[in-house]
Image (cartoon, rainbow, N blue to C red; front, side, top):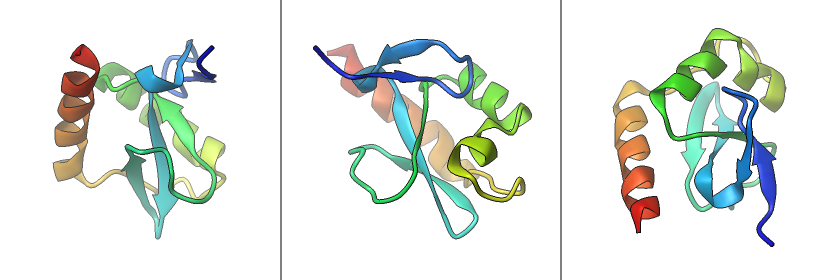
Length: 90
């Protein structure tokens, strides 16, 4: 049985392989695609809706216990989402 995590964007539970792990490093959010980086992590569905919801509700800051001014680098955002979708398509 695969581990289950909760998406910080929509609050729905899903398998670990269906979600992306996000960690904070020097006031920047980083996608941890291998889920191996040290430290606290938050999980989110690889959809724009879940990411927007999490940012709007400041869920990443709460889950990661960091300052509210943290954000994603824009270039990495869409590339990582698309790569995760392709990998899980099978």
